[in-house]
Structure formats: C-alpha cells, structure tokens
Image 1 (cartoon, helix red, strand yellow):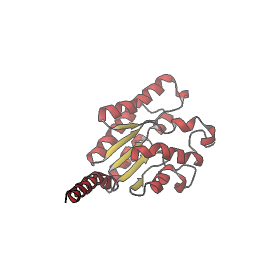
Image 2 (cartoon, rainbow, N blue to C red):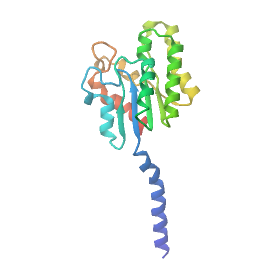
Image 3 (spheres, rainbow, N blue to C red):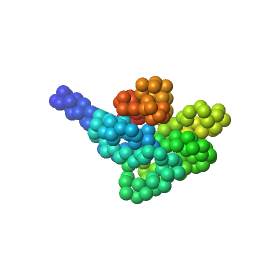
Image 4 (cartoon, one colour):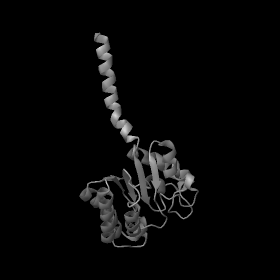
Length: 199
C-alpha cells in the first residue's frame, strides 16, 4: 500500500511538472523583421526562420518579415497584422534600414516603442533584437543608434536579444556579395543562435 501511494504521488508530481511544458508547446511565434529575417537572396525554405520552424514544429511560426522594412513601415504593418493574428511571442528585428538611410535615432526609438506597446497590448511576449550598423556612419551616430535598442528594452521591460549578425558579419564566407546580408551557409548558424530565445 505504501509503495502504491508513493508511486501515485510520484506520477502526480511528474504530471504537474510537465503541465507548463505542454502549455509552452502551443505557442504562436511571429517574426517582424527586415531582409535579415526574410530570406533575402535565397529561397524562403533556406532561411533561418524556416529552419527553426522545422526543428521546433510544436510552435506555429509566422514570418512577417519584409526586405527593406524600416521601423516606420513595421509599425504600420504590425497594426494591421494584429487585427487578424494573435501571436504569443513577437520578435522585432528592425532598425537596420533606418540606420542605413540615416534616419534620426529618436524617430526610430519612437517607432519601436509603439511597436512594443502594440505587441504587449495584444497579450504577446516581446523579444527585441539589438541592431548594429557599419562604423562608416560615424561614431556619434552609431553610438546613438545602438543605444536606442538598449533604452527601449529597459524602458519597456522587454528582453533584448543580442544582434545575431555579430558572429556572421565578421566572416566573409557567411556573407553575400553585397557585404550586408548573410548567405545560405549562415542560416543554420543564425537558427542555432536564435533557438534558445524561443525555447
């Protein structure tokens, strides 16, 4: 009888421990990014988002990334997207094109803050990607630009994900000829970098 009760208790404990895991398997994850997340220069099924979808099929993945997207464009699109989708997690990877076009960091920050507010108000957990631009824009602009992501993450209390291109951009063999976009060889590496944040 004692053994039966012990076994029963053990099974109860295991079931309680597995309960949150079963809930986590039902997440809908949406990526709102630019060309770095939109499989630029290659088939969509070779991009890092698709690769994660294949290795984490328990989640529903929505890649709402668009090449050339700015934070302003992302803000406009997110408003419309959330009228039809209810993701559990939203990963925002935008700002690179703002920087390449020399847009004011203050404006970019305002757009990102509004995106985070929209995502939070929909009930989604928000992950914000850090973004870094090439140094040829000058140290002052580059510093102001980089600080935007840290400030938004702190002020809005969301997780800041280190820029996945940090490890990629320094290796020419992982970059396309334009020197800006990761190539197909880089995609599994990016997927490995990003996987822990979605797990």
